[in-house]
Length: 443
Image 1 (cartoon, rainbow, N blue to C red):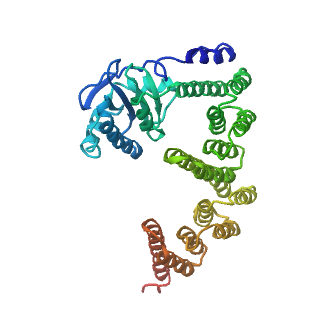
Image 2: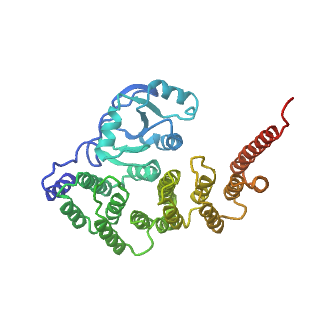
Image 3: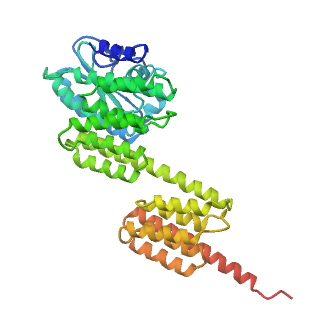
């Protein structure tokens, strides 16, 4: 049924070849292609008596390591129901062995080294996934039942499977929707003439499904590759999703946040993403919403850093446009303490800038003071550096000492200590050089 559903959509997309097959929910799971079993006996995914929980992971991520540890509890809890847990990494055998000898000592389930990424690719490509960790649940008949992030509910799925209450149809439908979204984005990145028709057909096909509608909005808003993003389509999908939910929905709030962010309303987008955390129902949805907030904060920080760098480039060249660019930048940093401080410090201390816009630096710090909490170490350190670098060395040193005295936590204390140490060394060096300069000539 899922194949027919997907083919219908693809026919509407001007005859693209269907992409549904082995490895998606409702289809046979791919075999495990393993170079070496690091821990536990070899496991063969096949029709029989076992349920399989397969995680594609990497040893270098704390999230991956934690998820591996958490799967121990699942192996213990469901072992009597024939559940076998397997972790597969495409890293070198030696690296996996080293991990298992140290951080992986607590892991009790099977661990394997992938054979030239064959397992990872066969599992992940089928569902258009790239990020790890990612978990797959395979039924006793060898069919894929579910897949997702380890925090997305694998334990609840296993509970339903062993109780005979699990229905894979919703997960299969979502697989189809996500494949269609990925195909739509592929067309958009190629500026394909079929893009408008494909987008409209998606809205028709999923007009009563909140999650696919939200995910389309998220995909269009977050994707930076298309030559021309159809934000109008994203907005239509979002409006339809809003009409379908009666109360505050974390999923809809995330889509709203992503759309706001993509349309230049980044502060509003971040605020809405934080509201999604409050709307979340249960720890799983809350973890997803918190991860989304972190994602937007990272993107916002990257964008602001690029804008600051662009201004600094103009300032270093003594470009006539630098002053206006700096004011525009300041006007856009209405809710960002860290970049305001960074901007002020760079203006005052960058040795490549010969004409320093000190009024802009001071305005940036004054704006940061309105936003920062009392006794902000970052702000105090930034103010100290600006004072010091603009000839008020004693005032700068005094401010740095105040920052150290009021620092909260090891991170803030280390920042203040480094600032005071650097400034003190520079001050003493300058005094020594001045003393040498003032020495009477030798006879």
